[in-house]
Image 1 (cartoon, helix red, strand yellow):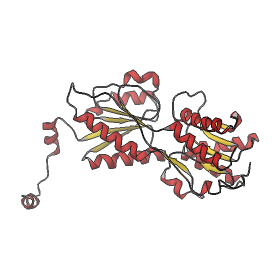
Image 2 (spheres, rainbow, N blue to C red):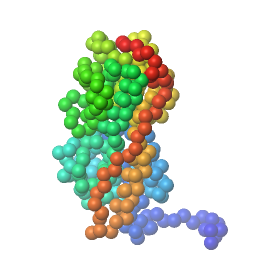
Image 3 (cartoon, rainbow, N blue to C red):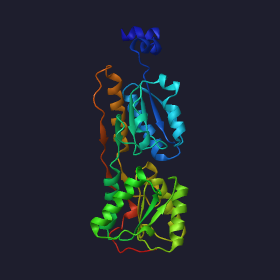
Length: 308
């Protein structure tokens, strides 16, 4: 049979098959942006996992704008998909009631909780605490934070700052607001600007915790411009993007489970797609694993610290 198929050059009619099944074989992925390596790598992971299940991915980006996110969620383009994986940035906890939609949806990230849809997210507090504890265990006491968001209560920045403060409190180290540098976006340029402002303020620090790797890479560049040596000033980031392995020095970071997030999100979405109407299981909230990845930027973290 396979030989006959090969000889005739037969190709399955996907459209006809999908009409019979009522499915498109396509899932949607809505991310804030792709210029940040974390989201680009997450998209790669989701696409690879979807392909493993024989699915295609329709990729959309919102720019982190609430109106754009809402427009995509209600767009006729969603009829081209069997379900959506959605990482909001513009929408917030006040929008939780808007998310139960008439198609399967899996939520990512830290902007909305308790929305009555499946939710896959990081252990932001615990992971940030572990990163800070790693620096403290190496003898660091003046740990600067790059990337906090002013007045944020729910979100990655707020949760990671919470973990940082927990680690300080447990170690008996007083929290110093002067060591926290605020920004809006989490790009390399923002990290560099924040670090330059921190240095200009005259505050002393012997380590840096960047709330994502892009910020941290920019901050590390600004440190080196001022003649500071890394890892005499120990530096650690968050997300463990591929670029971090190839920085000079290579950047220590927190692997917050990006690949696991992609695999679980795709699996949950497929389960929802497969469910028959009226037999839907309760929504799940799943927190993935993390680990601290030590590299050259903290390689002498146990040595005598230098302050800047």
